[in-house]
Structure formats: C-alpha cells, structure tokens
Length: 377
Image 1 (cartoon, rainbow, N blue to C red):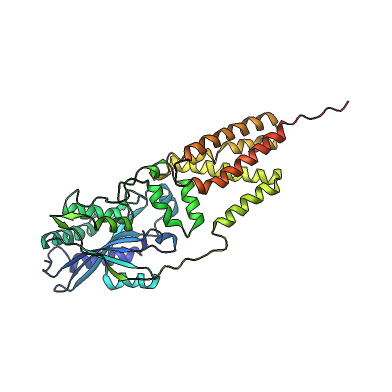
Image 2: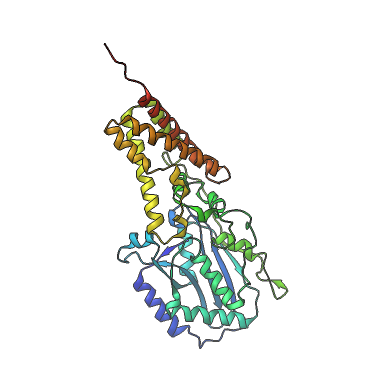
C-alpha cells in the first residue's frame, strides 16, 4: 500500500503542481477522473496493492496521478516512528506515464474505474486535491486500518461527492483479520508474524474500506445520483501472478523446527524455546502499550507467548522445582483458555502447532520436576 519517494522530489512536484496545475485551471468537458487500483506484489510493501486518483484532461494537457502513499526514509528515527505509529505519510502527484512505468517495471496489474460524475464534481475533486497538496492536509499519520493510501482516497472522494457516498459494500460480515489472511498466502512467516502481533482490533467486523481491492469492489456497486458511480473497470496493465516458492519461507520449515524441539526433548532446547516465547510475549506487551497502532493493542496471543515463561526459565536455572511446577501449570491453564478463545479466529490453524508444542514441552517439564528423588539409606 505504500510507495517511497525522495522528499526533495516531492517538493519539486508540489511546486510544479501549485504553479502549473493550480485551482485557476478550469477542467474541460473531456476530463476523465479515474480511481486507479494497483494489484498486489510479492514484496512486503506491495502485499496489499495501492490506490490512486487519475485526472486526465487532454485540452489542458493534464494527465496526473495523485496518491497518498508516500513517506520519507530519511525521516529521523524512521523505524521507531513507524513502530510507534506516528510516522508521517504524505500525498504526491506524478505524471501518469511516470506512475504507470513503475508498475510496468514491477510487473503488477493496474485497473482503472472512471467516475461517472458531472464536470462540477470533477472540478471540485481537482481543486480539493490541489489544495491538499499545497497545505498540511497532504500529511497524515499512517494507521494500518484507519489511515492509509486507500482510506485517504475514500475521504477526499466523500469530501467531494458527499460524506456517505463511498461506503463499503462487500465483506462487512467478516473480520479484518479474515480479510487480510489471503494476502499472505505466498509469505508464510509474514502471515504468522501478523497473526501473532495483531490484537483485538483486527477481530472486529471489517466495515471500513482500507484495502485497494476492497475499494475497487465497492466502487463497482455504488450508485450516485441514480446511476452507477463508476464505469466498468478497465485493465491498464495485466500481468499473470507467479507463485514463488521459498525453501525456508513456508509451513514445512515451521513444522520442522517445532518437530525437532519435541523430538530432541533436551532441557537446553526447551529453555531456548521458553526464552524465545517469553521474550516475544514481553515484546507484544510492550508494543501494545508503546505503539499508537490500535491493531497491536489488547493482544490476547500473549496467553501463548506468555512472559511468565521467563520466570519458568529462571526457576529452572535455580532448580526450584516447586515454582517450576506452579508456573508450568499456570501456563498450561493459559494455553487452554487461549485454545477455546481461538476457536472462531482466523489464525487458529497457524498457531495450533505452536500451541501443541508448548503444551507438550510444559507437560514434560512438569512431570520431570514432579518426580520424587529417591532416598538411599
């Protein structure tokens, strides 16, 4: 959903936009306004696709693409800001040919849906976009569901056409997590990672438009002034998706690692497992508190990645059998609660092998430390 741009380039484009394509320009009757949907790609930044707005007016020699998916890698503390959730994104404008060439290079399909609205609305949208680029409105704080390149396009369309014009028409009866899940089909560990780091918010029903392909589907169903808002979708670029196979980024390596932990069954291996799971739990808890991304808050996966496993590890090193058993039993109860809570969740199957591994390792640890030491007389 995100495209990175050099900030200097952005300001040059901004100056060009304000001086050459400002609000004084009156669009002609030949003006076409389209919503562009760029298909998903294989890279992390392109997994969800991209949304943009195209305004083409041959009489004024305009063919511009506006999108809200730009950020600056040179931002101080970039990674920390992104993790915290206060990284600033901004809108940019490109010539259409420059924009489309990027997707030719990446071999990603591009679709266009022309807006079937009167010229006055096209002019208003053009003016709104020009004003936004010349003001602080072009900046926004990125939020995975609530504020991104697609939701910002929805907002400016609603500002132009009416507050309730662009609404979600499909998949409102399933959760955000369920909607997201298919996007990770070719990236197993990203699917696993997002499954365990996302909390309660993504289990809400997906009533907001936040993904490009969702917007594309909804636009095809929306009526405006008693007629379809968009003409039939046109394919500007079409590429066949190739399913790549990675020797490590797949479910088999995941199951192999967990299987080896159970087969080797050594205390040192178990301790490393507890250490990783416990630290992940601490990380999830910290991110839920530290980050402004609401998707990371109230992460119930902490019942599986339980920080008390670090205490279990501590008492194992100290050979305190009583507390090893107490904390082990507590974690088993947590796993049972987690399992029943997960029964209707989209990511149950992907975490089930880890849940099973944790249960077996804990049971073995409890049994080992429950054995009475024989007294030799």
